[in-house]
Image (cartoon, rainbow, N blue to C red; front, side):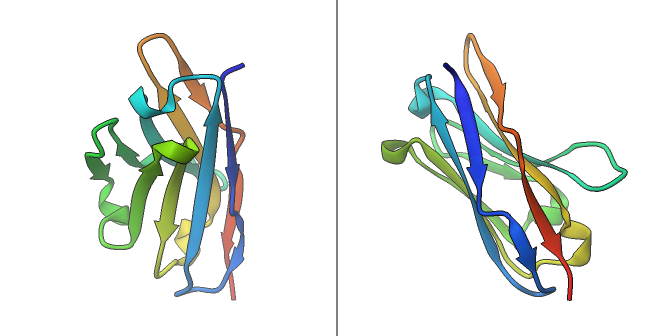
Length: 115
């Protein structure tokens, strides 16, 4: 069964940091393109960052300089390190994995930025 499971969500104070993890199973993790998305309350889902099977990364403007996407293929895990968090970063964060014959999403993990 192709599956992604996110973890690491929770409540963080403004200016704080948080690391999210996404564990994949049921597919060849090392050959997949991986990505993080987020959906804030009342807004559409948006891209955050993605990382290719070769480790090449790309970030949306709001994430540049604050967020870091990485992957550990030996653990079938992708990470999103988030720093200098702002209230507008409050959202459900989803991971996504895509390959030649699959495209799977996790169920999301909620990150709330609040003092």
